[in-house]
Length: 451
Image 1 (cartoon, rainbow, N blue to C red):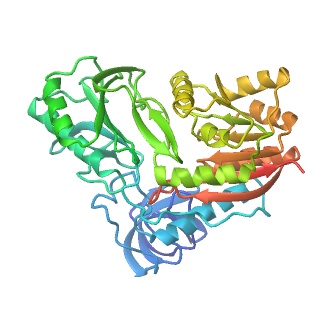
Image 2: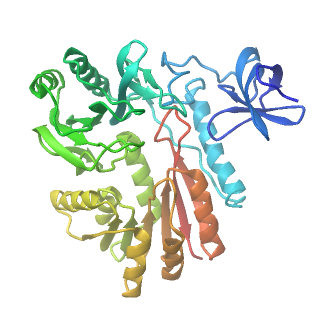
Image 3: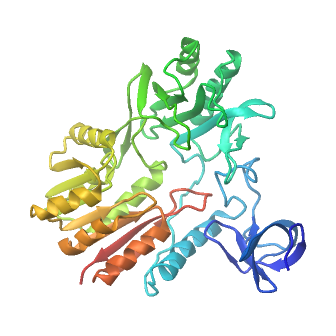
């Protein structure tokens, strides 16, 4: 019987989808933090559950040739990255395998072509958006990132996957908080003013937005903060006070007050200009976003005779990418602010063959179909929970020539592909794209059609 604090010798024969090493001890599954398949370790048991145990490495007996030294000094404590102990080439292999495993285990799809994951040439400083929780730490007020599966804030002076200006802006706001004794939020009591520091950066325009998330619509000594930010952040175009007075894990509230500059910033992607607001969704890795969307457009095979649907369209990125090749594109998005931004983005780029509908895809698309509207090609890019079955049923009835499914969650992708395949669609190709280097997350573009 496995016991807590017991030390065992273990051969790592596989890895979980979260990047934990997997071994077996007397037939019992052991998940080992930071272990790589092929390694042999002495592992200390830290948690015992009914069907498995969790362990940490006490000593290496045999190390993997893919093991490297993490570049982040707080890597073992911070929950942001999970794969920095592996070579980048190994992480790409791992992500392809995660996709393949999900398609086989959940989707029952064993004969699908899963391409090698497309990685980055330089997988550092790639994030255009940073979210730093602020709180009281052991050494005073800190701003950093949450520990894995915890709301303990890890002090991270520098994060090498973020844009460098994000850390600089964070340090300026943190310095202001300390200098003027601004109260920070306490999750336990609900007291305090400042909850998060959020930054958004236009990689191709250099424009920067800094968002202060607070519980009240007043910021003491705000001009002192604005002076420092304007002086020391190149490209600063917007400082927003976002009001969130509700308990829970949601970072941003719905009310914004512009303290400096514009309400939005702009970035360029694939020759198009996009307006980015505090609440709008915009992919966090602009280099790989262009790779992802170009692959999606390639899979779609659009021509000037096609009507295209872009479902869960956000601020209209794929919509506008597709518009230059299609007769007409319809974007559907349930967030009103994102729909407004999508319409503005179409006007900004002088694109006139697009229409946007505000509402849930599983509501809007059946309504359009009942009115006789059909699509030749459909893009779906849902959140992690995947597509609603009502939407999938409507797509089956509509029978577009191609469905291009963009997914950030291989498990719900596999579930939805299983449904579509059971209704006569066929998966032709799956292309993983590494949008989130050094984390376990992977994005996929999948091409389907009905023979």
